[in-house]
Image (cartoon, rainbow, N blue to C red; front, side, top):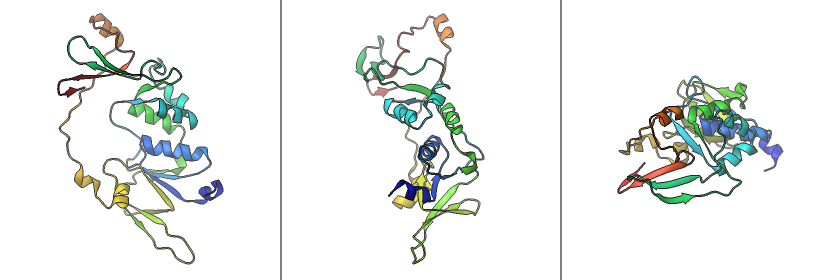
Length: 228
């Protein structure tokens, strides 16, 4: 398929989170437009911090958004030291394994909402449609006059047509159901794992006498039957 053929395709992206926006930006870089459909009334993310490793950061550079993403961090810039350390969660935090990257690779930590905000500035908002929750996707049969096409059905009763549909609509994805025939929502269950997160300003941590020599690295603390 040639680039000119790709540009003629009607492309739809279902889901306006980090994945959906990144996909739209990458397509636009090569002159391929897409219509993006988001269930919420505006772009927004929930969650907490995420790590962007060397491979993902390289992609962000390639599609031209890395500088915008880095500008939303705390100013410390990419971490160029060991990407992830595994340490004992007992007493002395003994180093168990250091997952190193090469010197020219780096990773960053960023809040998911800040990441999304940085991406929004690179998206053509005229191609974004809000309050469009996809509930199912159907496919028309090909005819002499036209190829088959996908019809995206939304909760508000409207539809949209596309030649290609990218699914970025999360854990209860309606697009995934169209591909696999399995309703993901019926299989979503609580894993029994709870994560507690918190932020402490560095100066306050120092004042409290906390040991801070480990904050230069992302770390996973492990113990007997425990991972944190």
